[in-house]
Image (tube, rainbow, N blue to C red; front, side):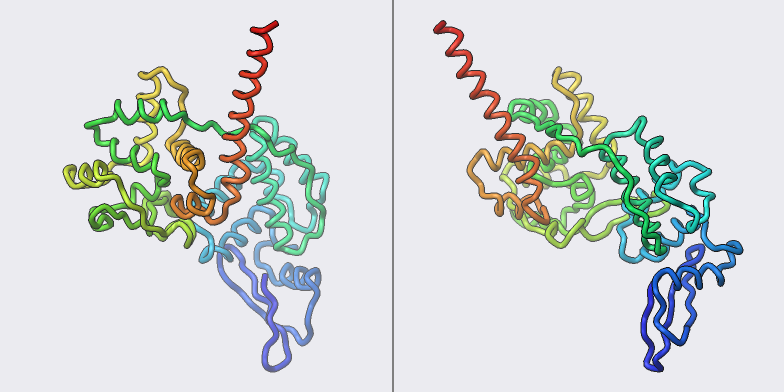
Length: 326
């Protein structure tokens, strides 16, 4: 919903219904609650306006031009997981106990992160349509540290993947590239030893693969590749042309063969950040090389995990010395 003042002094109320944009004007500036009631009175969906499900679809429709395809697919996935009863309830009849009950049921088999995402989506839709109910209680954010591959594990993966069609993709992941960035690269992005990263391969609303701009403007960057990697790309005549998900499938097979813990390709990006920090690179340098928007990822995740691991090792050494001398 959007309310704007017209040159005539009247006010236009814009809203979306079933993905279609609609508007009407009134002679005074309405409150959000009044505008919501006016929209409900004009709605063709029912006598009283939007059900939660129709509100979700309208909410996505209103933001379709500013949300990424992956975000929209995520929202649509969340809608499917909301109970039929809640989706059929009229927006104006939804209260905090109903939202809390929905979140409680959803949380039974989901991680705290998934629950936070669902709660944020539900409350986003409700507040978009003028609801002022408070947010439900959700599980505390997990303090579990992310798994960061060790240098030995990464080297073992590099060695085992030599000569395979996935070698370049794995090498680039260890240099901080996202899977979507790796899969969008072409030979034209490589000049000498410099690689320009300015696009990503993502799925659209219909789950078809498409090339789009990178995740953020900060993700656009130029990096310098080691001679071995740039020469290997030219020798292969490509960077990676397979299906995105098969990189992880191959990676898991390597991990099982090598007897190391399974982790996703994205965890190679975790390794890159922590390893660069260990080598003395500044947060700003790591941020620029990896295409992060802010240093928050380094501060709250990678650095913290690295420093925690160092503290554990130091503590173990100290305690070990104490035990051996007792």
